[in-house]
Amino acid sequence: MSSAYYGIMKFEVKTQNDDLRNSSFSFLLIFALLSLIVILSNVSIKLGTISRYHEINYICRLLTIEKSSLNFKKLSKLTNLNTKQKMWDLCREIVN
Image (cartoon, rainbow, N blue to C red; front, side, top):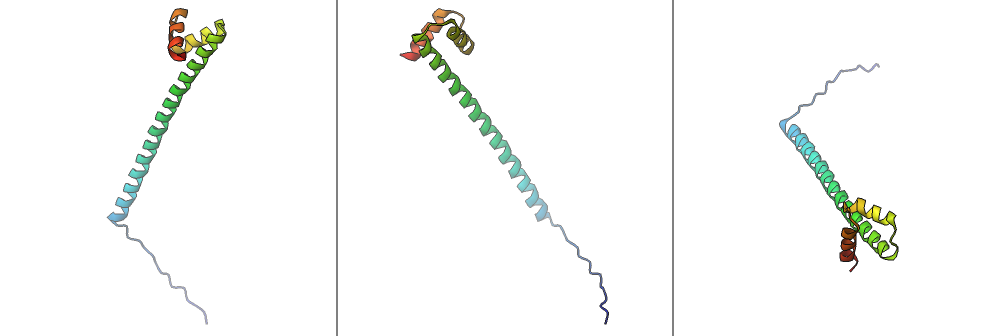
């Protein structure tokens, strides 16, 4: 006996619910990714600010021990202060 192949066709019916579910998922995914990017950007900015503050604090402490021109140059770059007097005033506020 030979078996006969009967071609059975399968077909799917897409409904509007499927489209709505997929578009809602896509919207939520995009929203979550954008939120993550914003949060990570804010964290990196805050970490940069904290790092800068600690570096200024460290250099001011170094200046109280060793008054080298290299330390004044580093502090000048970080704080945009041009005169040594302004840098000393800043360091006095930070160290005390």
